[in-house]
Amino acid sequence: MTNLAISDLLFVLSLPLRIYYFSTATWPFGQILCMVPGTLFSVNIYSSSLFITLISVDRFLAVVYPLRSRAIRTPKFAAISCGSVWVFILGLSIPVALNHSTSYDKCQNITRCFESFSPNSWYFGFIILCLITGLGILIPFVIIASSTLVVIWKIRNEAHCSMPDNKKKITRMFIANLLMYAFCFIPFHAAFILYGLYKLKVIAYNFLDIQTITMCFASANSCLDPIIYYFVLRAFKKRKDDNLELRTLRSSV
Image (cartoon, rainbow, N blue to C red; front, side):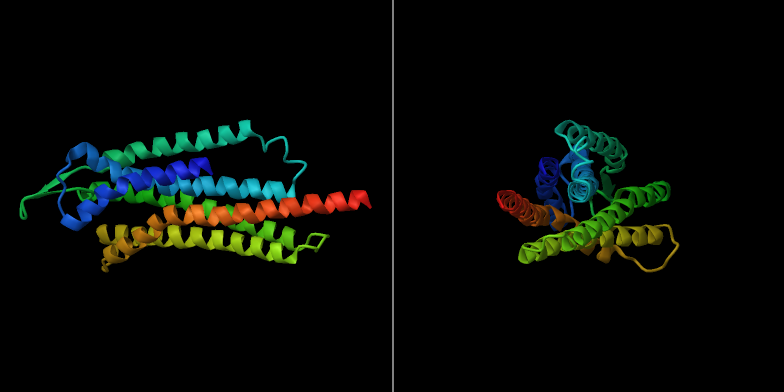
């Protein structure tokens, strides 16, 4: 959760620069700062995706294999996993940063940012985009969806059924978490791929407006993460407390 919060915070800190550019259509901050918003946006999306995946896997192990998973569900293993994600994300951010540069618009006499991609850049960038979408979004989504469904099935089919209301709350929160991931990340990448196909002259329709709208969906992830996971963790903690209370009552009997 801490790593997810750091990822969201980095993105939020970059928003004023992006808001200024889209509201004024000019970039007065120079080349270095032009790299910051786009890079942190990518860092936020893919680090959030991978950290949410790790949380889902941890939740899956805690519910389905509570005893057998104790050896790997340790602070040390969690730190190694999170560190590996950050190393991967930082490596990914280097080419992203290098592809975000300023360009001078002679017709309007203004400097632009995020808009200096040549046809060759679009070609290679499109290949990278498809690979990243598969590795950073689609595969994590499959993992999150499958682990969430198994956890829900496990909770709903537990032998003791003394906490039906809490089970329903946990189930709703898990489903909300899955839908949030799909809503925030999948439309943006679908629209971005379609826009890339347009820039490569494969299709005729310009999906830029749709891509801009879905970018707002992706950005909303930073606002929704804390809310969703607060209620998920609170419901999950209550379930553990109820289970502990039930075991205590059984042992006393």
